[in-house]
Image 1 (cartoon, helix red, strand yellow):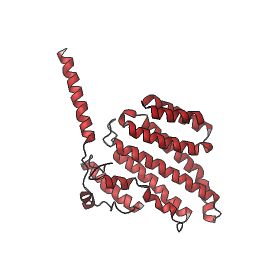
Image 2 (cartoon, helix red, strand yellow):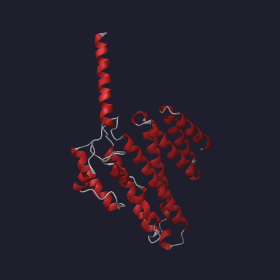
Image 3 (tube, one colour):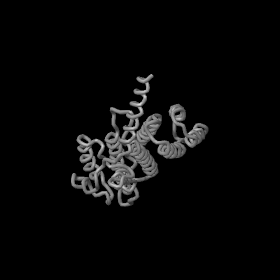
Image 4 (cartoon, one colour):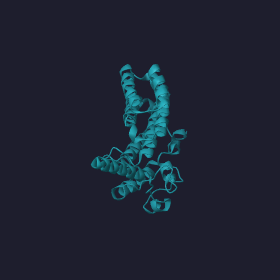
Amino acid sequence: MIRNSFYLFLFVLILGSCQKTRDQDFSLSVKEYQEKGMPDPGQIWTGKDYGQAYLVLSQLKSTQPLSLPRKGSIKSDVYFRRLVSQENLSFLNDDTISLKEKAYRIQSYLLIQSDLDDLYTDIYKRDQYYHRELIDLYLFGLTVTQHMLDLSYQINESENLEDKEIRSVFPTIQFTYLSVLSFILEKQQNASVYEIKDLERLTDSISNSILENREWMPADTKNNLKDQIRVVMESVSSDQIEKKYLHLLEVL
């Protein structure tokens, strides 16, 4: 009996320690990041800026894995917000840039999102220190692929010769969107990793995105998405998520 009580106490102690570590902020200050070579967080970032930021952050992760910019941090939130800022995609609204050039640029942002996701994920642990940041990175990926779809629609309607030449990539863009969506739903199934409020926010974006694109989705794709959604509903205890996904299952 004493031995069992001891093991229970040890388990609670370790669990509490892990939670405390997750809540602590080990990120650097803006000045410290800039001294290491990070771009200005107050400016819109280009692909080149992202490349420089990734170089700095990947080096940091190898030596100080808990020192990446954090969401809501007094010290580093300005950098995390810049990493996932839609303002960095404002070139899509620039009429002086051709649709073909926009299509070329937006592709790189999907790779950027993937790299950042890798940076913020600890592949050796189920519990994730950067659980809040990962939710925003998933949302950023969904946003990028939606922009890719929207841009493809513009290209399909364009009479410009160079735009017509790249219309054939549209099915690939659709496949990319569906792959990202499936990836996010798979992550959402690991409900214990994330906070409920973050999962609910993610659910809202997923639901809206699927509703917006469901008309062109093949029947087998819809069925696969339904299966993934059902697994999420079984994994997450949230009335809001259940209500959202039940409605989604009805209309798919």
